Length: 102
Image 1 (cartoon, one colour):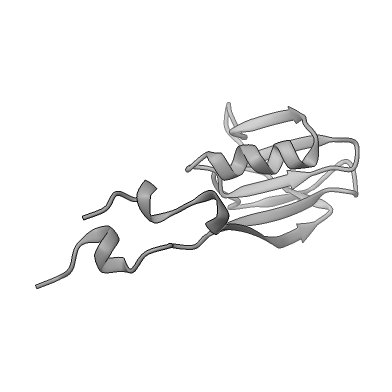
Image 2: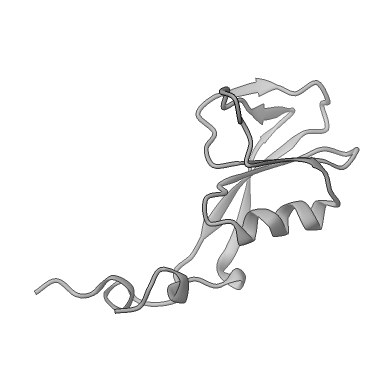
């Protein structure tokens, strides 16, 4: 049986538009996995490499927010906010990754 890591690859990750003008308001003491100024490509690359990252919000000024969930959205202070959902596609058959059921 292969591990989850061997059944995914960076080329199997895609991002689908999720919302415009909003951000994932996850609340709590640490609402984002990463938050800061990054080039858009670097922001998306960080999410691609993090298994627990599921959402990316990009702002025109370079601000980046990565989140593991998006249970609630709130209007962003900057209307340029674009949130994308990370989609990971398997590169092997389920039985190869997780074992077959007998």
